[in-house]
Structure formats: structure tokens, C-alpha cells
Length: 286
Image (spheres, rainbow, N blue to C red):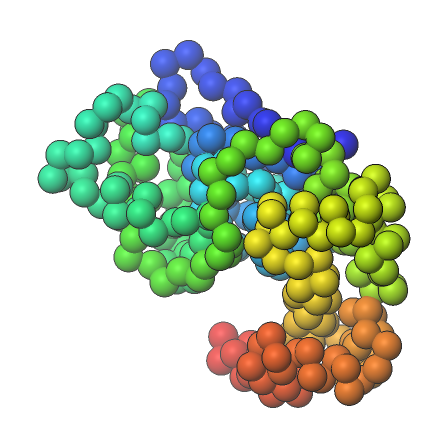
């Protein structure tokens, strides 16, 4: 397994490529491609890895992923059937200078703000409506929808997904190692993971692995692991099950409640109880 230097299948004479994913899971490998990707999740849930970040996703979420950003939509086991509509494009494919005219300045603004990736946090209904019209639209209609989509995204509230932006293409060997690391950690974050163990699985010495991981994610391995554990705990805290804090800590890979509380507060700037209360209020408000 490797980070796939993914080539988006491009129909002849199409600069805006639409892909509809339906199945038990989304594409299961960490991959990257030159195209910017706008994805609307219509059904399914799981975790989205983009460069240096781990983000939960669920039905109704909309993401923009920057070109060449390694990413993976990992579907949750036993979740709803996966269904997603994605738009792929590069600004260069429209021709040099096409978007430099003043009337199309919105597109350049969009390009300047997406970085490695963003999550759309408002105007979801109107953006979803545009995304759902794309698969059956003509080429001309698709371009008009594209401009409206850019305008809506520019006006929407956004949350940065990946603080670390790298346009570097990942080699076959590097990609294979990253995929092994991410796959193992995503499946075993609730258990103890040592540096020597993860380095051995990557076929590297511990010092070499530390340098490698930091180079490609701008984080230490244990920073990444901690953020994954906290992300999982947030899902449990916000979920429908009223689990005790001690059980949530254990299911998220913490061997003590005190360690969990300290780590959670350091990353989320609030206690687990405060976070749960905030999520409960938000759910009731909806």
C-alpha cells in the first residue's frame, strides 16, 4: 500500500471533473493529485486525514482539499453506506490568464484561501444543492454551477483542515511508509503504541522515523497520535451514548482519566465535560 500519485480520470474536453462515489467505503488509500477537490458527503461517516490533520466527517459535511495534499476518507466500520459527490479541477487547465480578468477575481480569492484544505461551516444547504446538480449538468451548465459554487464557498464560514501545506509529490517509498503508519495508527490508537514499534513497522530506526514523520506532517508522531485520540474522544463525547468520562478515556487510548483530562484541555482549550455540554447545547438548539 502506498500514497497513490492519483490520476483523476478526465473525460475528453472536460476541465471540471465530477466523481460520484457510492459503496460500502470511500477510496481506502492515502493518495494525492494535482487537482483541487471539493467533496460533499451525502451519506457515511468516518475520519478524514489531510496532510497533518485528522477530522471526523459525517453526512452533510463539505470539504475542499488543496492540490497535492495527501488525504484519505476512512469510512467507519458498520456505518451508513458511503455516498459522496466530488468536483476536481485545476486553475491551469482553463488556460493561462483565464481567471485574471477582474470579473473572475472570486476564483483567485478562493484559491488563495483554501491552503491544504478547509471544511465549509455555513451555507451548506445551498452548496449541497449545487453539488447535487453537477453530475447531470451540461458542460456549459457545469461551468456556471462552478462559478456559483466558488462564490458560495468564498462567502461561507470555513475551518482550516491542514495547517501544514506542502505541494511536494510523495515518492513511492515515502508513500508506502506513510500509508503503513496511518493504517496501523488508525486501527490501534486505543492501545499503547511505542516509538520502537511504529519505527519497526515502517522499516526505519526510531531517529530516522522521527525525522521522516516530522518532514511529511510538520508534527511529531506522538503529536499526531494525541490529536487522533482526542478527535476520537470528541466523537464519543458528542455522540448519542452517555458514556462515562473514564470509559471514553479508555476507548480513546488513555490509561488514566487525569492524563486524558490534561491532554484534552491542552488541545481543545476546555475540559471534556465542558465540550460535552457545549455539544449538547448545540444539538438542542438545532
